[in-house]
Length: 276
Length: 176
Image (cartoon, rainbow over all chains, first blue to last red; front, side):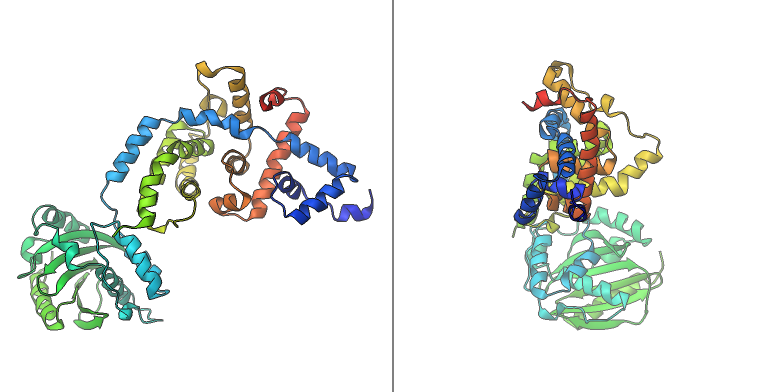
């Protein structure tokens, strides 16, 4: 063996890749040729070859030992579970690159929800770049999420009663806020869903109403206060009215007119004026 | 409107349960932990079904979820609780009816693999048992391909030296 040979000697890692057929044809040929002249290299290859085993056959019987019945039952239960809370934050991140990609992502996410029908996305839904305002983020995330809702999304849900009402109590507990029907029932807008979401590790209550005229309207409440001043804005085809009261932030959002939402906001704000 | 990705995950999971359980067993050496790992993997996969890329292989995606749950959530707890890693010999036993010669030799190979350091065992399992390419194994484990190669080399070096000392005299018979 020459010194030159040593300098270019392949590593054990490369030799294993050679044995496993994971090298490029050119590299394979190079090592194959070298094996015919390099006895030390041939010995190393021999040892690595001896380190092979009939792995696949040896582990085959373990498959039959899997507790198939229990695993099947577990999967049945998992498939029957209601949809887990969406993580609005990650939803938002996925939306940013491009509206086209966002629309695709929306459809993917949407199908996990109850027969959710994707609404056309307004191009204006993109978040203004470089805005570090966290409260802006949550309004933006909710606006994008609500854009998924159409009249049909909510039409099939029963009015207020049942699950939504029961869920209000537990939602309120998470927020540290009493969510009674007296507080969250809105005039002429039947409550259709009440869901808990996770936004930036904070609970976010998402109450969805169906306005017979304009379609879905949402009242969102999250913890963490902010500016108490009422803010009125428009994102895409959505109007938003947001404000803070004590340790909570509120938002009313929908395709209803800004005036309608502001009237509702005044009603809601007065109901939550007494703390607790 | 249906989501292709979500539907693929929901309908495809069942076919992979036994293989996921086996991977969990190889990682944890414990049947109960393996079962928990499969359950956590299924829940996580359903939660993130929208992230699955249609056109890629579901089993690879599931392996990477199981591995990440093992690495980040289960492994440390198992060690902390002092449950340790039970001897592969008692854990990965083969039932009596299968104690034929082939079964014994298969058990011997399993035992050898289970005695390898975890990173090597994990890689050997994915590449040589599950048949993943180096690239696929690197993706599942979140390491560079070079790491896959060096782990396999270290494992085969160890096993090769054992063969050299005649500790696995029956292996050749199993190969036939």
